Image 1: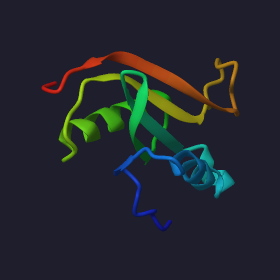
Image 2: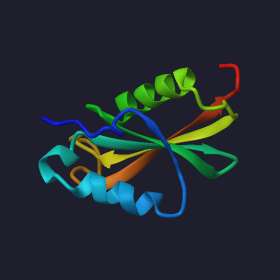
Image 3: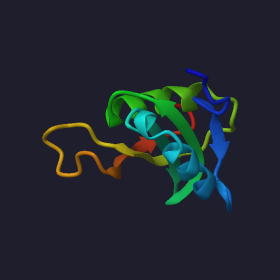
Length: 111
């Protein structure tokens, strides 16, 4: 499988970003179930996004949190990580549908 060069790298969120992101997520239907986009919000505003492969929403969140902590971007206080993907859990009412899960909390510039 050829990997996209933007995988596991943060991208700044700007005007056309969401349109391009969702085009990427939808380009290969089979792979869509393993792709997650994690938007990082500060004060309700999305500032960065990470696209990754993961098994669960929680795993995508952990990958994004680790990547953010080690990224060269200037750190800001983070209120939320918003993970977008397709749920595979048999107990989820959104199983098979694209939706998001919020991971809230405060990650300071030093944590």
